[in-house]
Amino acid sequence: MNLIELIKQPWPWYVAGPLIGLMVPLLLIFGNKTFGISSSLRHICASCVPAKIPFFQYNWRKEIWNLFFVFGVFIGGIITLLYLKDGGAVVVNPKLVAELSQYGITDYSGLIPNDLFSWASLSTPRGIIMMLFGGFLVGFGTRYAGGCTSGHAIMGLSMLQFPSLVATICFMVGGFIMANLILPFILSM
Amino acid sequence: MKETLKNTNTDFEMRSLDAICISEEEIKTPSWHNLKYLLFGILFGIILIKAEVVSWFRIQEMFRLQSFHMFGVIGSAVAVGALSVFLIKKFNIKSIYGEEIKFPVKSMNKGQIIGGLLFGFGWAMTGACPGPLYAQLGYGATVTLVTIFMAIVGTWVYGLLREKLPH
Image (cartoon, rainbow over all chains, first blue to last red; front, side, top):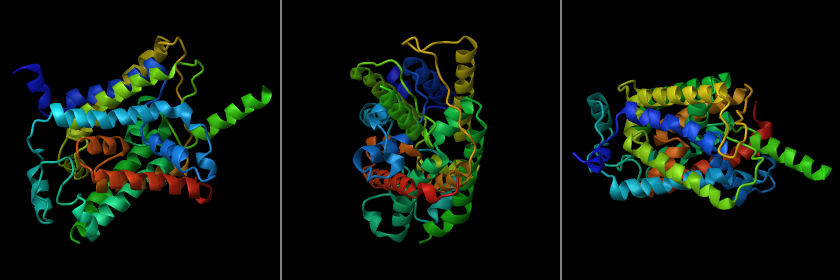
């Protein structure tokens, strides 16, 4: 099996995790930057619609590296789609497959379920809630918490910061509540 | 001169509000140097997708404790990150520009709890945190544009209400 074929396979956690962790020293050493992504959303607000809100009154150009980084993540997605796709569907726990099939979610070919997230499902109640409300909570929650999975869970925990531990635990608790207790109602809509 | 300095400091304080990844560069670097961040971003995007951590299905598995995958990824990433930070501090490693590497210290507030829970809800719904959203879009899920737009709206509304929210 050649290298490209190997790269095309889904990567196991013990390969991907350390590589993600290496982003921390890479950004620190090559530019004295602390790893974090959700701030990019704030810089977009500050650059496009500051609307005289004090929270967006700062020189966002000083944080432009962050926008370069997230644009890179987008390009990385395109490169993977074009050159590194393996074509197989994601393999998940059979229990999850059984549960999701109750809600008509059976297509595992994409990163996000086509049965749930598509332009067409924007006209369904569950599509609206999942995409519009879910997206809103991602933006609102990360900023309120002061960081996301990269800023708090990875960078913050790497720096052994207590607030980041609290934030990470809350991310997980929120996710558990949503996935197990609330999502069944939304998906049944 | 004094005025300029004051302005810069206020600007830095404003930028550091509710943000963990903020940094004040003392050394002025040419703007094309930003291209390295583009490259790092590309690498990060490829890793996120190939590790399936941007998969909505994998996130559902994680929150149902049905797979070790996500916990393994996050856990080993933190282990490598923490070891790197430890080594950088211990050997006082400088950045390539010769700068001292600084680590911002964040103070505890209610935001990490309330905001954290709200983001957790959003993460389980969209199957994505902010980084993965950009990766999903690049990977051809065009409808993610809607989710990203709403995440920007969410950030904006937070900025609008910030003074009224408990911190």
